[in-house]
Figure 1 (tube, rainbow, N blue to C red):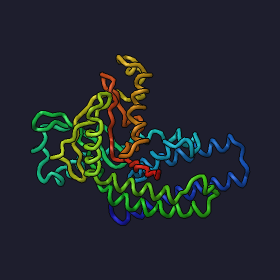
Figure 2 (cartoon, one colour; figure 1 turned 30 degrees about the horizontal axis):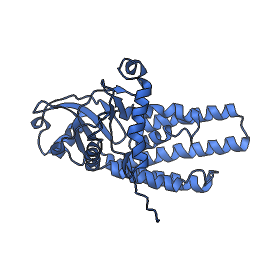
Figure 3 (cartoon, one colour; figure 1 turned 45 degrees about the vertical axis):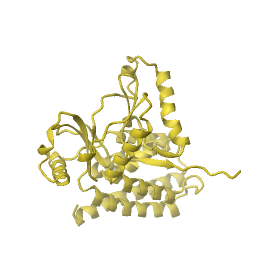
Figure 4 (cartoon, rainbow, N blue to C red; figure 1 turned 90 degrees about the horizontal axis):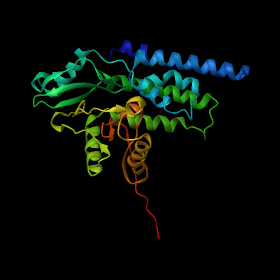
Length: 310
């Protein structure tokens, strides 16, 4: 990404947020009715979504986090940016091919019998392609988005300015949401996601953790093909957890699936160890046997053991 494009990126982000700030202040000072506020948040969401799809990078992740927090942000805004969860535009295949060959040190065809050049899934940090290894195994190949390192660093600096301004000049209750802490946590999460070796290690951890639980399926990892920018996993077929029409055709009921989800996630949040921190509908599938298939372990947290004195 050239310096000129960096400056354009910074300008577009800052101008977008400052326009939002001015509009919010004006509506607050003018004491606009609730209906007018709903229209404002809807328009803010539309412009936010257009800008994020245009610029991509870290901003997509910010939009995804906001879209999952209906407890903190207005519903009209949430509705406009919900599509960011799994509708991120993919990169050009030529750039993906270049990354594969750089990471594997030779022509990608030396490792693969075939690979589909259309992304199966595309997110803020990586894209997933379906391929077949030389041994005939069908795999999901997660490749880091081109130039994402440079884009993320530029976005961090830009968001730092936005957070500083919002923290000091917007009427946000500090007890309600601490923007500095939120920004710090976001930075830690993204920096971890940029290194696919960490996600590989997390996948291996969850495979070991759930090896004796037949209600859970964790994709196998082909460690010999994994690098910091490429992650190769077993291809798994499943039904999206929000596809109720197909789920109702299975031999398990929705109630049974809900109970299995509780058994899978509740211990992660209550017991010491690593937990899956991004369980949105795009990352949870249901197998034909009714197993809970977990995907995308880039965003995780860790529950530390509590020490009690007797």
